[in-house]
Length: 243
Image (cartoon, rainbow, N blue to C red; front, top):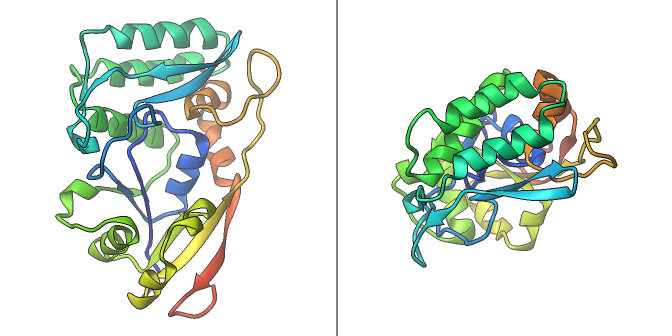
């Protein structure tokens, strides 16, 4: 039996490059939409670069404390779509791949009258993957009918989707109960992401922006940039022997 690598993450809004690195290094990427929504997180906002430096693009939402991510609604009283697209046009119009990437973003923004934040984010992620010619199997955690908290939830998700390897960022080592993976015969591996440097507009390079910055400047060549921006290592244990 071959390894099936599973990664898990909340469905963030126009995620940063490291998010997509995690996707391309997994066979199944589980969009964790069945956990509690966190206010002012990357689930409804991310950063782009302007002539004045970093700027947040925020999707306005209406939510109650304790709501799950999949339940959070977009607040369409505010014309956020027009504002976002105008911000991107003003600050990236001179980028080499502006028009082809902007067309994709605009199409998603107006493809329907978005009400659900999670579904909007997932649509953007899938469209970006398609543009870059990258593939991965996406699964919503809300579709799995599983329960649990913390590491127990992660283990249950990996088992449910038929995985035998869990891919984690090194930050996960601080809170994950590693023995729970081992007890279920699941290998635990870590990825080390190194942020790439590429040509940007507006002066000195700024890292950790939304992937949209990379796309506008590098276009479909972004796929190669993403693939080569890290390495998977640090196998803690494996029932199949050291990788």
